[in-house]
Length: 76
Image (tube, rainbow, N blue to C red; front, side, top):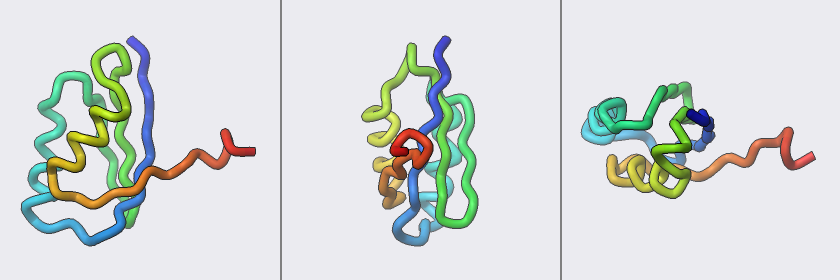
């Protein structure tokens, strides 16, 4: 298993429906952890089961508006 962590910035306040749908992502096989704090969303997933595009698509289906955050450590 290869664990990958992807960081998103939440660009609009989450509706109650989006928040509930986001909580249901835990049921998706391969999603290991979802952390949300202020305007950030961090999703840890199993890269042998999912890829980043699939994870972003799953989040988009919740109705939550997000933007990918680039890892500053990698950019340096």
